[in-house]
Length: 254
Image 1 (spheres, rainbow, N blue to C red):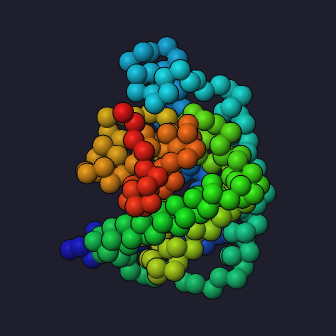
Image 2: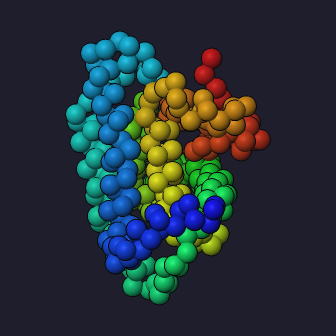
């Protein structure tokens, strides 16, 4: 039975194989998923201007999201995707000869693959992030753009320079391939990774947030990453807390 749960979904996707294998699909899938994940938090930003019941969940209650910052973040994201990520995905498509498998993965296998991939991506991003904060040239040349905002909001997630966007895209794109993930597992990982990244930057400590669901403070979430943008010398891992805890850079809000 477990082998069959995902098969109808995979059969549907195989029916659109030409779209899945299009050189344009990765960029527009990533961009569409990202903007879709941002929309609920943009709505909260609008509501928080009028309703104190929404604003009380903001991590930095005095901060507001202006239309100027929304446009700045959005235009930078679109620019990076179309000018830099699109040519890379077209080149990858040109060199790729892979065929889509007929069988979907079993659900436990998909969940295990996505979890392992998320752990590895978390380590890669933590190492990259720490290095760019410890080496001044790397910070000033590449990472400083992302720290323009000391208060996070959903669209600041991908408000970064071209090289930072490409490097994180490289991690998220190559990690599933190195682990030999099924294409459906890859898509699932991409969606989860985008959602968690946006949630990290959303600027809200909501009752249903991921860090409240994962036990034992193993997951940092929006509370930890917003503190990183505010102080810049702590909480370098994007999701989990174990690497920061290990090297002594973990900080929590009182």
